Image (cartoon, rainbow, N blue to C red; front, side, top):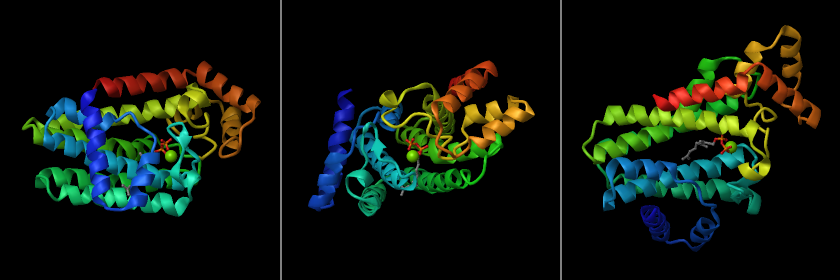
Length: 275
Ligand code: FPP
Ligand code: MG
C-alpha cells in the first residue's frame, strides 16, 4: 500500500519537527508494525492530507504505548527486534514514548474538536486498560467480564477511536464505525492472546506461551479453567506465574484441545469479529 509509505513519511516529518537528533535516531530504530489502525482509517476516510495526518497521530500514540508497555512488561523484543528498553534502558523507552505521545497530542490540537476528543479520550482508556492488565496479573483472574473490560480499554479503545475519527473526517455514521472498530479491536486482542499459545517464538517475534507465565489469564485459559475438574483446576493454578517446562506446556496444550477451550476461543473471536 503506497498510502502507508506516505503515513510513515508523515510520522517522520512530525518527529523531525521535534527538532531533536536523538529522537530521530530512536525513531529509526523502531521496528515496523502492521499499521492496522492506519489501514482502517484510510479504508473509512480515503486518502487525504487530513487522513494521513490522523493516521500518523494514531500510529505515534500506539508506538508510544508500546514503548511504555515494553518497560512495564520487561520485554526485550518488539516485533521480532530488540525493544528500545533492551537496546538502551527503561528511561530512554519511557522518555521517547513521552516525546511521540506529546507530539501526537500537539498535532491533535490542529484537528477537528470531535476528532481530537475521540482520540485523546481513547488514550485515557488505553492507559486505564494497561493498569487493569497489570492489576489482573496479581491473582489468577477467573472473570470473563474483567478480561473483556480490560481488552476493550487496552486495545479496542484506540481502534474504536480510529474508526470513529475516520468516520467523522469522512462525514459517515460515526457510531456505526465506532462499533465496527470496537469489535475489530476486541477480536484482534483475542486472536493475539490465542497466538501466544498456538504459534512458535520465531513467528511471534517474542517468546511463546509467555502470557500465563506473566500472570495473564487470557481467553483460552479462562475457558480452560472453567472446564477442568477440581483436581486439574488446582494443577493449572499451580502452574500460574511460574516458568513452564515442556511437560507442563504440553499438558496445558492437551487440556486446551480436549476441553475445546482453544477452539471455542477462536470461535468467540470470530463471532465478535463478524459482528
Ligand atoms: C500491548 O499489550 C499494550 C497496549 C495495547 C497498550 C499499552 C498502553 C499503555 C502503556 C498506556 C500508556 C499510553 C501512552 C500513549 C502514554 P500486550 O502487552 O498485551 O501486547 P504485546 O504482547 O504486544 O506487548
Ligand atoms: Mg506487552
